[in-house]
Length: 316
Image (tube, rainbow, N blue to C red; front, side):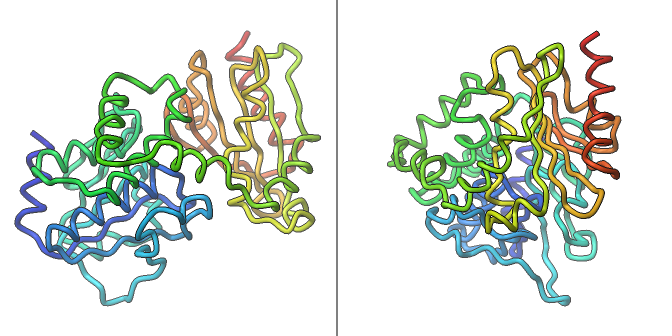
């Protein structure tokens, strides 16, 4: 069994690197922090890495300051855990040069890299898989680890609203609450402690809303100029794709984010009817059925038109 193989690697090795995808979301941060703290509690030498900083709304997590964002060129590890990444390149590190054993843990489809590849698309978050592994290690979670894993699950399920939620989601969340996690504390910090810059940025973005003639997909867009005008960063736009998805009748929501001149990152969210992961792969990106992303070269008008052509075919 794959979980037992991972347990064996934890038991017989000492130096660990734990990393998730760049531009991290709640699952990436919570899973990395939870696993890193658990390994440290087991007496291991652990480095928690992310190419980008911890999002401001997640810095309340105890010990979130353990993340580093650069590694010395000479740093080597027995094992590297790559979490929630989908593709090893999204770690931002040359991992094969850094470690003897590469372990991929993910709940997204088409994530196939690693010496050990533990991928389960039935899990609602990568944190669920971390919880399973720690249970298999017979490790007793403490409150700080429980908070990290709970935040990961809360964020990746949209507060337990997404179709990925299943019985195991609530079972694990209940176990974490039993360890002392306060659901209100977690939710209020994650969703009700936004910076003023985020609200100003939202004011610029909402007027860009476009709804398709069929009413089944809608999008908003963000330019680099908007970020400057709002005094904001890309981090402040986290979750903005959910605004068009909240419109009655919309099945696919899109967020076009300009990251350089004539280059856009497109975030896709689906209510389940349309496989946006497949759509994103057609555009050179990736993801899973209900959440995915891609990059498009061209103007905003071109990017919107290109995606619309694909969606019109899917909805025809």
